[in-house]
Length: 238
Ligand SMILES: Cc1cc2nc3c(=O)[nH]c(=O)nc-3n(C[C@H](O)[C@H](O)[C@H](O)COP(=O)(O)O)c2cc1C
Image (cartoon, rainbow, N blue to C red; front, side, top):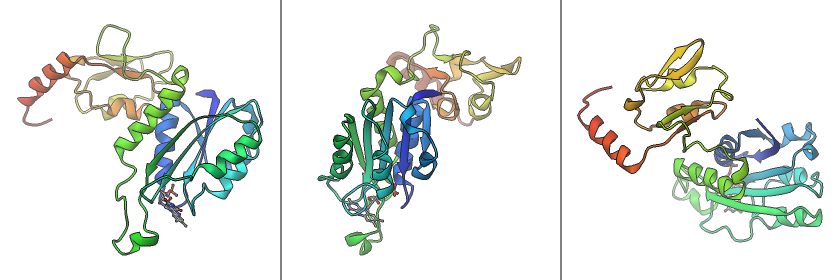
């Protein structure tokens, strides 16, 4: 677990922003707290803090603004949000003003549309249905990868010359990868997963997404991906 980065997220409406926060926390392998949880933490112990919430009346949640007010100069921040209306406007400005006053640099900003039933959306039964979706979560993960590449785990490259890799220095032997893999790629040996049946891996990423330590990488070249598709095209059931 990364001890230098913390994400604080207040997601009081539909849990929209928390979806992005969770994707970022997975990519950074760092802690994710809401504002109340963060208030009982020493947030000054972290080098970088990600601050995110929905946008409510053109600004981040007041509790998040309060949390930002407790940061020290010497720390860095990144900001994210979800918003209902079609454009972001100056919705990050209140938070940025607080950070600026404390001399805290903002190293990046990210925002996605989020499901919203307020205002004009009342008439149509809600706007941005299904948002943020998986694609937005992927974009959120790519955002932290772009601004903090040194902290992100390379979940899409392998170093063992194969297609699937388990980093045993990080694997805690929870064996969730074994449990979720529909293709039986893994086997358990001495209470830990081993890769048994790599050729059947469809790159579905269920193992990566369920690994609490982000200890698994999968990589297929384009040629291999085409070969997988061809091989599995002949299957008629799991
Ligand atoms: C009380 C309230 C006020 C809102 N004000 C705005 C706004 O000013 N601009 C906007 O784009 N969206 C606004 N929204 C929509 C939310 O920003 C959007 O639904 C967001 O995804 C909610 O995030 P959450 O589920 O993480 O709380 C508002 C929503 C609520 C409930």
